[in-house]
Amino acid sequence: MSSPLRLEELIENIPLEDAVESKFLLASLRPSEIAHALESTRPTTRRVIWQLLDEEDRNQTLQYMSDEVRAEFLEAMDTAQLVAAADELNTDDFADILQQLPKTISEQVLASLDSRDRARVEAVLSFPEDSAGGLMDTDTITVRPRHTLVLVLRYLRLRKELPPGTDALIVVNSEDQYLGMLPLAKVLTSDPSVTVREIMDSDVPAMHVDQPDTEIARMFSDRDLISAAVVDDGGHLLGRITIDDVVDVIIEDAEEAVLGPAGLDVDEDTFAPVRRTVGRRATWLGINLLTAFAAAAVINVFEETIVKVVALAVLMPIVASMGGIAGTQTLTLVIRGQALGQLNRRNILWMLNREFLIAALNGLLWATLVAITAAILFDDRLLGWVIATAMMITILVAAIAGSLLPGLLRSLGIDPAIAGGVVLTTITDVVGFFVFLGLASLVYA
Image (cartoon, rainbow, N blue to C red; front, side, top):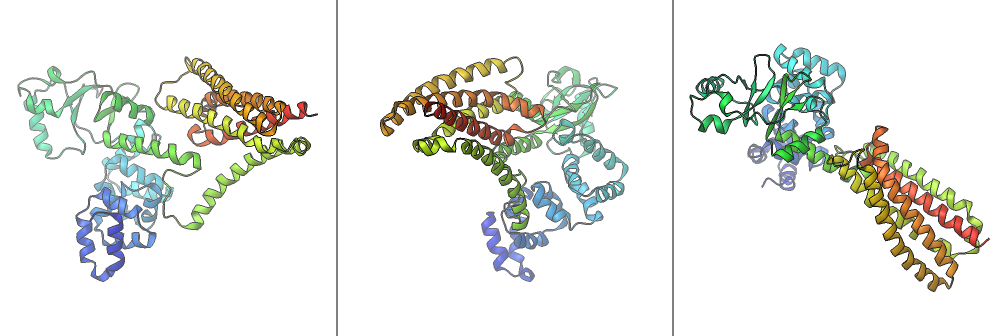
């Protein structure tokens, strides 16, 4: 019953003025499920669903939408509605929403918040979105090491409510410097007379405010963390990161790895209007067209050779394709190693040597097989020698390019997961065609 398709069917078949059943269905869904339903339906149906939601559900649903779908609804919200959303959402989630708004509107919303909420949101907005500071929630509960559990429990009862995702209290000194974490499980099961210092976990690491989100995700995974403190250069507590934020980072990175090489944005709306989508895809197709022209230009240089030996036109794609596959294998492995923090300047040369040796052995195997096949099919031993040599050189160049491209692109501020495939394909095509046709020109001159 919570399927987006079933929800769409209900919305389309039940008139808006008689939408009791639809409202009942929506009331039974969690905000994340409603967001999924909105993203899984056409724009016209989305607007109907949105009108059926009450204000609280709308505000909660906003945090689970992709940026592009959320922008569709933010455009129709006034300042008062956005301020109301601030009361419903965590600081980091509301900061994400503000970043999507025009500057004038975001400034109006900030000015409408009370001083406490405004300071929290501005603190998050002052850091890059993909850093610990951009992920953190400033709503924290802190305790001092000298406090007894009796005092801690009394303090928690007075609060009556804990921030979402709280699994531990953060221990700080009198200067608000981070000392460790106090799991709620220990608070509930330990002798109330003991002090925080006696049972706190002082070995739980804090995240530096400038730490990249990929490193944070890796640390959460390595240490099985549910939450972590965020500190500045002096170790002063600024906020905390919870596992739900880290899961979002992991999902976004995974989607980027799949969509990036195709030139698609992580937040792209599946049901976006044709006019908006055409422009985005046209840009990427244009880039690929330029790389195709580069390869075609190389082929054109050797037009006379191809006319003399027609078999070259048949075999050309094999050389480029084998180089492309070999390079992609290396490129993917290196990008993964960088993402996991396994590759650095100390071992990249070792990786390069390893990939070069693997490429040499694989190149020798398949170049020999293709050479024999070509020589038999076209009754031309020289042709077999030419394609074998070209394939070996192309595969070796592809391995080197695949090893070094990610680091080079990162140094230029370009995401290798997105641009690496296009650049590598251009290199393997140009090198493959040039070497193969160049050798053939010398042999058949």
